[in-house]
Length: 301
Image (cartoon, rainbow, N blue to C red):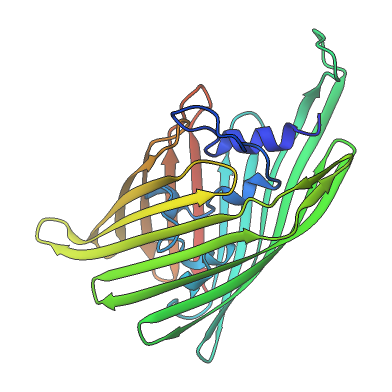
């Protein structure tokens, strides 16, 4: 029964490789931390290092370093059944530092409970909640950006609830005007105990990526992002994304997730007007999981 939260979240993200089930699959707690909250990053094949913008504080804090001014962002995504994810983030600047604070919640309600023995009719229903409160800081010095963040975590399911915390660190270097290189380590923290099952590790993940930009005569500015990641409880995977900006107010995005049996092609769009920006991502799902639609609205303040 208490394994349900990990199974649910693992379905939303990559849970198995093409060569079979990974030996440690499902061995980590708070699996929802692996899900990107940025619609732009999701549309670009899950490449979060350089494409999370004002939502970088949730996963790759160095991405905050070169943002201008203050902003507020809100994100929503719906998954199979009643599961949904909602986030909100505030970004502010002081001197050469950039700060962010945010909340990320994944929840589902009305889930059927059948106990330890198989029965035709459910014995009742229960709700599920994963919650993360995050804070991050970043700075830029010449071609180098660096950032660090911390998340306070809480999970509730059935009669069990647990607290935890993790830290993130990331860095990006810009050796050329058209080239970015990035590295991040996410979700480092002590193990969590769930009821009578102690010792669930946090889903620590390493990420490395590169982004390059060019001016295309037929499509205007273009950016290509490539990224790989290795979580502690799964095989290595990755993603690639291409963004075209044919107009100042329009971004067209497409991507591909590598090593992910449940998702592959991704697409999305970005619209902006004045201080407002709207990002949308479409992530088709395999294995009858259904499609994920992620929307992020951002405004300067």
